[in-house]
Image 1 (tube, rainbow, N blue to C red):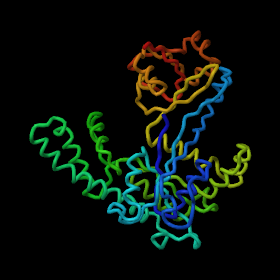
Image 2 (tube, rainbow, N blue to C red):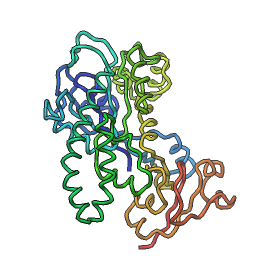
Image 3 (cartoon, one colour):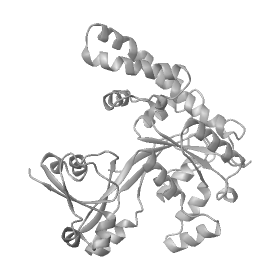
Length: 367
């Protein structure tokens, strides 16, 4: 299990350029006209994790298998998308299928690349996309709430439970706020809220696409976005899609590092997005390691051991008996599972165990 991010934005903001660079492919056509991306392009990249190499050394694993991050490059949105303008219906449908939104905002001047709104204003662009998503959510709830009210008044138990959550979301949207500002009070309410599948309930990461010269320190446009993001309680990153394209052309990791140094950058945009994405979606990584492979797995924070086992194979969850767990640090310090067991660092955990980032796990099960 990895996670799935939709790359969205107005036409000509650098979405496809960024997608191509991040996935190191040229499957999405990057061109200077609206709707050059007609169908969503999907790219998967390995999530870099230096811990895997350490595990491979300890267990002399034949291979390393990292977890995966999936990007979906979605056709550009224009004003009126919620009413079907441009490729609106397709755009909205594609967003419903992703876990999080990477909203690319144009923060660079270039007379050779037309802007669909005629000028550079990333805050306006951010609000344009957010408004279209809110309108779509409003229309969706308004269509559903009257039939739900009738069912609730007729005594339907599920409708009675869902109605106050839907009314809460509708009230927030009517006030011009995205659905992600709704804060359900308990896990049951959260589950009901998630069942509404609202577009503006998805977490958002703003990516300021700047020119190469501003990649290290940003510019006036990216500063505006960062302030706006803070007010909206959303994270924001400064990335140059053009630089990412150049990095993607370098196959040698050492060459990439040297190139980044010359630009006064510490890490690639891909690594920045992965870190921000993990935080955004409350994800963690656990490991399985042995002679055949050292492998990373991704689950949500709060996942219990049986559900984590189910990510590996459904039979592991069905027949879960227990989990033998060693923290990554203890595993490395002890030089592997056997020594960790001898030193009392290996723990036996049951069905109620909550997974932690860096756990090295051996699941025992019986089907």
